[in-house]
Length: 426
Image (cartoon, rainbow, N blue to C red; front, side, top):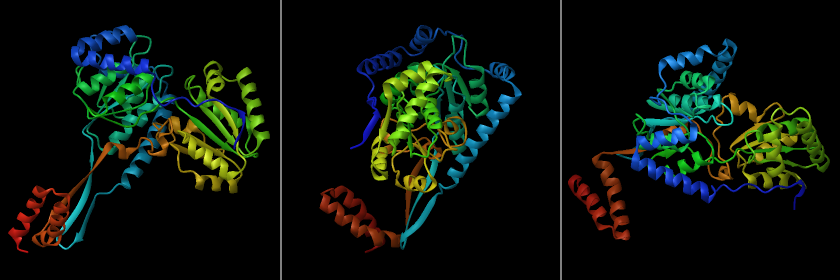
């Protein structure tokens, strides 16, 4: 059994009943009253009631003028990284056509989704990088129409840097609307928007629950809860660097789990001391990160490599860092199966993935990494199969289909095969 230097419970991946009920009521109200309800919720929740929720070219240009050339340059670098990796991923997804029997040709095509709504969160922090991940990537996939939505900040429209990031990432339409009402507008086709086929992007508990309840009417990328980080470290890892990486992710919000699993109790105790020191002295977001660490921070001591990997794969964290000696690092790397994104070695950090190294930061939480990866260019492609048959192909396959249909007692299905076989001659 593992030992604990500090233990905290993991949060539930299920939204509280109050959140589920509130979202359900809002969606029903919006579906019933339409644009009037959208405007009422925007006024009530975001203190925002513009003539139009659409963002025009003049507003986009004004936002760009407020940014320094240096920030624009760095945004461009991050966008280039994300675009390049998505293009390389897309290149691995090829159409297929193969003759499996004489006269039987089977294949598939990767077809982009027609319209995607990208929700770019901007509540606690203005999330520039979310535009790179959820606007730029579907455009690389070939999605013809990407609608980007972000909430108003302090009742004054989209944060200028966010708006610039959304525009330069390739959004075809930009709308200033937040929360449940934003997702409802995308799904129902309200607020002067045509409905989309898929919604992507992270958000707070209400946004996540709205995606869950709207799934089926529209597609979604995945259900994301509070962001998570798991650091795997041996005794050689720098305790201060590990502490910083745990607190860096904890600043997302007070419900964000931050977990260290180490094979050295002395190292775990050193990391705990470093966390306390950073929070008490220099950590810039100590109020939020400290609350998250107090309530959802854990330090686990594993007996050996095997137990460490077992724990890590059970936790199935959104972000997993490995900081260890080279030989140990490679063993752990090979033994990890359940993670959203992996950061290998002390030079790799979650912050790089979150802000623009190229990999996507929309990732599975709440142990969903056991069965899914994160957002990537392939999420915006439908892999659709087809078949082509010659007369010889029918002769090859129809008797088998007849037999299977008879065994299943689906005789009508069997008739359709028999008719074709009789047309070409047995």
